[in-house]
Length: 298
Image 1 (cartoon, rainbow, N blue to C red):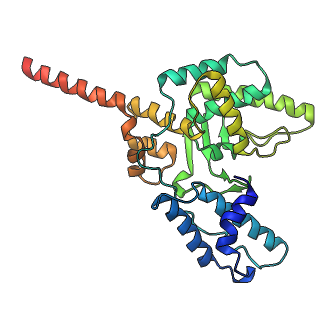
Image 2: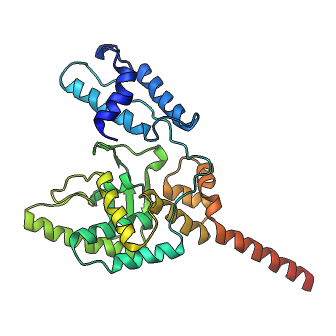
């Protein structure tokens, strides 16, 4: 769905009858709420309604730069969360597909592009970061000596750095030793390329000119890798779900997973991931059987 279509289909019908100086935050907030309601409650409308707000915000920002309006009325609008459709299965990599995908990555030709993609995917898998949190990372956010990663910003759809999704999204994540080593090797290789181009890279996952990369473009590359690996298609968010599933089945408490993922509420973590704890459910049955047997033998 192109930009022109979004403007003609959604933005003009919503705001086209208003003069720029009459377009106020309450008017915009009401419309954004309606887009969210159409999708979340009525089962119609545009699934990616947050993109409509981002586009409108960008247009109004340009109007400010032209001095057509004194401030951007869309700047502080709150976009309601998009709800997962009932019956929609949470996508994550099960053990077989995870093993298949990791094996595929290890066998890729040793080009910088492949190395970049591999490090990105494995970082997402090892941290549970949202893709736009990961793309916003700078090397100053990663302490390779102490093995920590500071999440303090995100990259929006128009490649601007903004504050995290919520206050709870600001967090420090511990890194495992293999991920630290991988990032060290990646940084060294990135630095070598930077020397050849006369650049010092500040961003972790930038393009060749140390500029932010569009997550949608990287999504196309992910789809191609999945097809070649023989894995089902999924989005970057599946790495986050897979990370949570691995931790959950390893026995990590929900509270720890909540903190690591940056969820605002524990109930959110439990609502999303409780059905993924298949191994723990089996363990619970095993513990019960053992307890009964012990009781019988006592």
